[in-house]
Length: 317
Image 1 (spheres, rainbow, N blue to C red):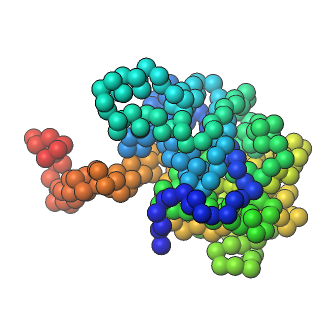
Image 2 (cartoon, rainbow, N blue to C red):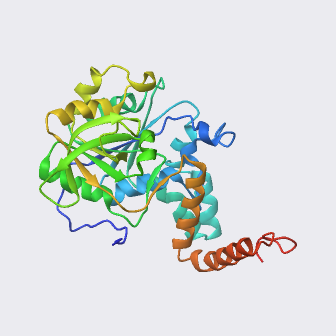
Image 3 (spheres, one colour):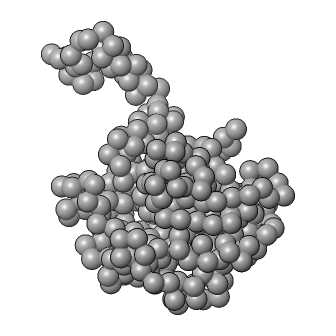
């Protein structure tokens, strides 16, 4: 069951307070749109994809967020900053709704930024956060991997970290023929339903050699011990420092658990999934959903009947 996306102020305080959002990728799958615009800033309805990620962290009680960005990612920094001139103009017009929408990103959490100087992989991006994180456990949320706002995956992972310590990864069962697109986990049962002990990990294995159909998706809660491991992890697949390789070392010590997730997740770095994300989240919006859903049903009906959708009537018809 999907529960409302709310911050539970009555929940006990957790030891994890900081989140890292790697967002330094080049976004080559979305060229030419990402030639000058960060892929994480592509709009999903009326908010950039990365804002959903930060909202997820904030809703789970993480009030300190470090963005690991790169060159040409200044738009991300600007989005989570105050925009004085725009705010002043909206305030003068009395447009409280849009004024709140503009101010919201900067109010979600304490937002920090650091640049990953070289594209050396996810493991290296996480290592860039070491000075900011220190010796505390922390969450990692990938900037183009969206979990539906109505899901509570991250909160569940933080709870598992509180019970078992160590590191926690999010796992999703995928068709075997797709496992080569992900890190893959070997698992064994743990003490509770929906939680497994991770005994090994491998980055993007061939389907016939994969240890399971459990893919690692873009949510992690990591013990600070991962930094020492990353520091001595040699470049792996693609010549990059792989976070999966470091987690494999930790898993050998029995300190990695997985939360099995079967809810709604979107890869906004993939064109088809990006479009599905926009449609799903637009349909779920109370201000847009009813009208948009009615239009969508009519549009699908024209496709099924073989008519040319919208011909001579405009898209609003």
